[in-house]
Image 1 (spheres, rainbow, N blue to C red):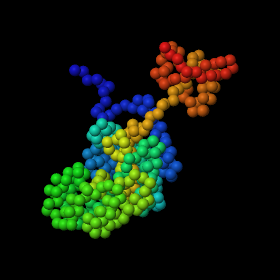
Image 2: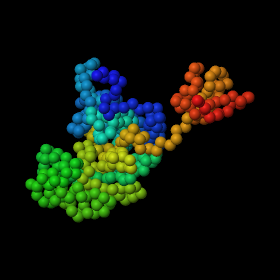
Image 3: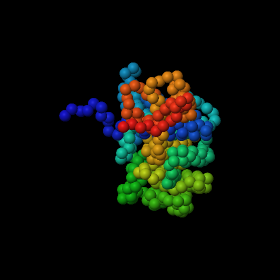
Image 4: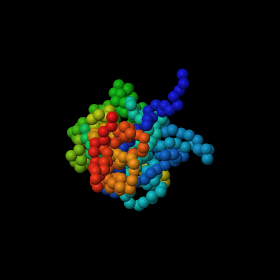
Length: 387
C-alpha cells in the first residue's frame, strides 16, 4: 500500500482559512489588550540548545521536548514545548531590568505527545508574565488579565481554580521524605488515586499522614480554606499559603473562584499560588498560571514571577464564531476607476478581491458574497449571484 506523502503526523494539522482568520483575529485582540495593560511583546526563538531550553525546567518538560542535532555546531537542540521558560530567560538575562517587567508572547510550541484526548501537539501558546514583584498584587493582576482575555474571546469562565503548592511542599518537608517518595505522593495526588495515597502514607506519623489523606477533600468554595486551617498542621508555610488564598478570595470576589489544595499541576515549576480557568465545552483547563519565583536563577538572576498561558487554537475553537463577513468582488476588466473604488472600500475595512479573467462562477468559493457594479458615474455593491 502506497503511503500518501501529504499526510501529516498524528495530532498535527493544517489550519484552513476560516479558522486561521479567527485565530489571527483573537491573537491581535489579545496582544493589543495585553499592550494596553503595559505588557511588552517578545518573540523567543523556536529552537534553542537543549541545555539553555531546559535549564531549570522539570523532567516532564524534558520528556515533552523534541530534540535534534544542529548540523552547524553538532550540539543538541530542542524545539520549545513551553515558551514561558524562554520569557523568564529574556527577563533575567537579556533585559536585566531592576524594576517590574511585564512581558507577553505568542508563538507555536511542539509536544512529543498530545497533552490529552484530541489535543494538538502544536499548540499556539499565548500568555503574559510579570517579573520583579513578589507581592500578591501581581498574582491578582495576572488573574484579572486572564479573565479579561477570556472575555475578549467571548468565553465565560465557569470557574477559576486556585491552589498553593506550599501546602503539599510543607507537609512533605515536615515528614522528611526523600525525593523519590515525594514524587510518588505527588503522582497519587495528581491522579486523584486515593487508595494508592493511603498505601503511600501508611508509614508516616500524624499529623502529616492525616493531612495528606485529607488533601483530596479540600476543594470547593472559600469555606474550604477555613476547613483547611482546622484539619492541616499549624505549620508557618501552610498558614501563609492559606492567608494568601484568602486575600485572593477577597480581591477577586467577582470571579467564579474555587479552591483545590490537592491540585499540583506545575508543582515542580511553581513556587506559590497556582490557578487554572475552566469553561463549558472544554474537557480540561483553558488557561494555566501561577507564581514561579526564582526560576530566573537558572539564567543568572532570581526574580519574582507570575503569569499565565493559553492555547490560541483552543480559544478559537471555544469562541463563538459568528457570521464571517464576505468579500467584495471587483470584476474584470480592471481600470483606474475600479482600483480607486477598491482602495476606498479597503480603507473602510472591507475585503475587496480583484477578479482575474476566466474564473467566472468560482468567486463564492474564494469568500466573495458581493460584487461591485458600475451604475452611471457611481459604484454600487450588489449581492453576488453565481450559477
